[in-house]
Structures are given as structure tokens and as C-alpha cells.
Image (cartoon, rainbow, N blue to C red):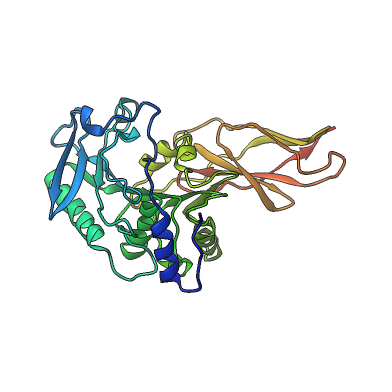
Length: 343
């Protein structure tokens, strides 16, 4: 049962936290009923009384520096489960440290943006990150943060209270007070299920819309129609997520991506098909995704390797102007490409 959202934000957050009993961990593989212990690179320890797990990169070499991913789990999900970032398919291409602190406080234990201070667990986690950076070969310009549910609230909290500490972050089925939008400087990807019955989707929608209203360029929002609280399962299918995350580095940006080529629109029985050719992908101009506009209003977002889309929401005999904007992994947008009408 979804909580009742009151006019008092703090009471609303408390009501939410009591309903979040998250048992799953985002990005588990189907066989990952296993714990993390079968990975020899994974060790569990304590820091100032905080239990945590640390995965060291495969074939870790002293003298080299590696990214660090910090994962904030959901309420009561303190089991040291397997995690996709530990898998050989990721580690072979993107060797990295993965820190998984465990929070025993189930009610907003990672903090939120309705309060001005960090929780005890978050203070210890941030101190632990600083300690790890001193003792291991960790690239301070490539610290990444993500969380689900209670951890998603924690992501927004950290970004608002510690601007500039992390190079990139993503939040899954969490939420934020939109009043902190101006304080979030970190490249951010927000995910939420449209039918979430635990954390209202508006808590992600509203902060995203406010960030866009304020002119923020380094934020993206993905909403999954028909999906409830388990949107981490959909996020697991986002093929571009690892590439986007590991490309982010403090103060790093890139040039404008090449625009879609030869865009056209053609009426058909079930609507209008918009087609285009992808530009030759150059390393520094790779298209992350496309924004497709109809009559200057955003219609949908499409993967960077897409080449067509059928708009079934219009009648084939009506004329509309379609345009495509390519977006790079650094949130840089190309000039729009106008789709030519073909019969």
C-alpha cells in the first residue's frame, strides 16, 4: 500500500521510509542468489562501526589508479549480495573498486534532501571513501555514486550536500525535495517506474523538471511505463549505463556530437515512420541517445544506435514536423536535424 503524502515534507519522508522494505539488490543477475563471498576480490570489514564490503579490481596493480563506485542499498537490504560491477564482463573492460556500505537504520538511513545534515551512516561512508582514496590507487576524479529506493534518496542528499565530490551519479526509485535543484552540480541520471507503489514517481519527476527549468544540462530522466517499485530490473537492461558512467570524469567534457543524417518521415497505416542514418561514430563524438521532437515538443528518447521510430499516436494523413537532436555521453547536444516528408 502506498503511503499517504502529507503537506509536511518530513512526515511524508517518514511515511515513505516505513513502507520501503526492499529485499532485492539492483543489477543482480538471475543466478545471483549467491552472496558476494564467492568473489576472491571481495572483502568485508568495519570502519568506525560501519560494516562495509569492498571489491578490489581484478588484477589490481599498485601504482595505477582506478574508479570507485559507491552503492547505497535500499531499506533493510544489508546482505552482501553479488553485484554486476563485480562481474568479469565489467571488470575486464572497466576495472574498478566497488564500495558497499551497510546501513542498519531502515528509515531514511542514508539521508534525504528535506534535512540539512548527513545521517551517521552517511558521515561514516563519506569518511570511509576519503580513507580508501588515501590507502588505495583510487582516481579522485572518477568517484561514482548510485542507490536504489532508500539509497536513491541518499544519492540526492549527498549530491546536494557535497557538490563536486562525485564525478557522476544515478538514482533509482528514490526522490528529492525540488528546492535543492540549484545545489546539484553532478552529472545525474534519474530512473523511476511510472506506477511505483512505494515511492511516488513525482518525487523523481519534480526534481528533474525543476533542474531543467533552472537550465541544468547534465541531467537525464528515464521513466518506465507500467513499472512499479522494482524499476532496478529495467535499469539493469540499460546497455549504455556502464559506458556513460565510466566516461564521466571531473572537469571532462567533449565536442558536439555529429547529428543524425538524412532524416525523413513517411506516412503509413499505423502512423508516421521517422527514419534516419546514424553518423559515423567518432570516439569523441559518439551519440549516447537521440531526442525526437514532434512540432518542437519532446516525443521520446531513443538509443544512439536507433535508426527509426513509428509514431502511432498520430493519424497518418496529418502533417507534423519531426526533428532529431543527438546527445553525447557528456550531455552535449547537436543541432537539430529536420525530417523531410517522403511519400
